[in-house]
Length: 201
Ligand code: GLN
Image (cartoon, rainbow, N blue to C red; front, side, top):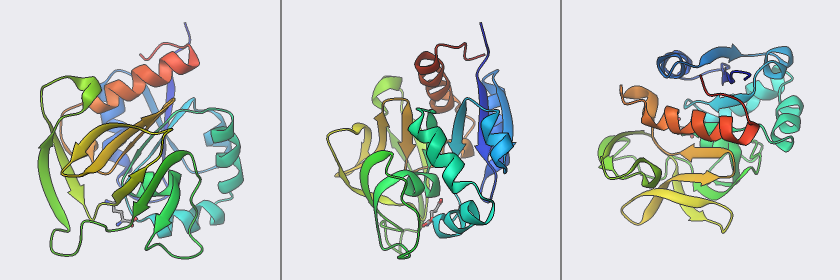
């Protein structure tokens, strides 16, 4: 069986941590900065960082249209923080020209957890992972203000969703790559491999 090739969008943000996490799960991982590199991967991680910067760099690196094409073709994604913002249907408090790719049926508010709690950690329950809590690291995180019917909420913190699943996509407000708990990456690899009918590792 073919093995899943996972790309990490490497324009900006916490790329290395995701490469290590995917490799830690036993799968192949490579960076994606060019349309050619995007073409060679089966699934893509859109990391945290700064969504307005990433949005601009997608255009500078001529990746916006190739990325839209791959997403339209069903390429699975794992997105965290700024990555989640890029894939959202609606971005509140964003720059007027920032890209919202409309893959995840969520409306997000940038930096929605407020200035006083720019960063915090919390133990949360992620439904497909069972009862063992996941230590979630939030860094100037987007707030999911509304998840539409197409997005399945798989974790919440307080009154708001912090993780959604939608078809082959998982979107998170927090940073799983900043802990050594690989269960979210493993879940993504399993779902991506199942969607593409290839082997995860
Ligand atoms: N606040 C950032 C943004 O708006 C996201 C922060 C993060 O990715 N940790 O893009």
